Length: 286
Image (cartoon, rainbow, N blue to C red; front, side, top):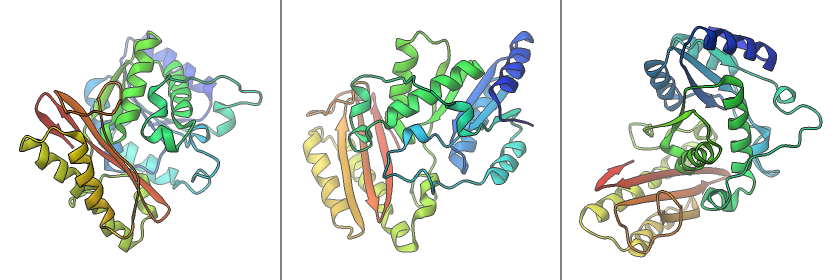
């Protein structure tokens, strides 16, 4: 496994792969890897000749009061996990390599980025789109793998690819959970034992939504209110949002039709966790 930290070295390696006609699968990450990330890596390896993983805690997607400085990092552990998975290349650049002095260019997907998480994290998806487009330009992947845990990110990046006529294919992968249902997240490490137990209410609220949908309830407001009531009964939970929206536009729904995204963000102490389920053609995925 090759570890590269400069843009120049990366371009040389990608050029050689492309010259050989090899396909490339990319998994962009911020490190502190868990099984969710590794499932993306396995998808990339299965579908491509070469697998590249980026590890970069992107300052442009953190707000001034967010956790950029303390975001969990452990590159040696991450590298060992990726080598075990058979990754070909890890791109691990310093901030100044991605954003040199005088950097001024950003990418935005109008409208989609200001809903759901974008409301409480202004500029977040601007930072995500900017760094992902830079990675696409540098690594020239045939496919890029992202988890459905951040469904809004998946939808925004798919729209960016479509609007900018990029050739990369976005491959969304299933959300990976702990045995008790908590969605895997690098930020779970912030939770103390009481908060970790309380956070299970997120999964329970999605199970409630699933039961209601399966029994024929289609009034989004009724489902949403029952979810809010359940989460609010947990003393350690502080709701950011609970929304039921169109799976393409992220606009709130009154009636659930053939597609819907049930998404939520909730604080436990200082830790903000997200989760969701997707309802697509009568099938629920969560």
